[in-house]
Length: 88
Image (cartoon, rainbow, N blue to C red):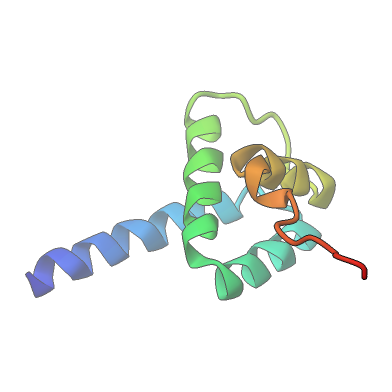
């Protein structure tokens, strides 16, 4: 059980390191912030970047704006506000 957990953590780290190779400095900072606040979303983004790289779709480094666009495509439904202002 412990060995499996360590193996999974190692694979996640390898995937993140691969994804980081395709990020600009600004995008890398944003990825670090995302990983601190939302590790699950950071994992999803890493998986998408690795998949794009393995399929040969990444021709250059992903800049900050492209990284933001990728985040919006992964979870666009969470961008909607869920509160209402009621005035009396």
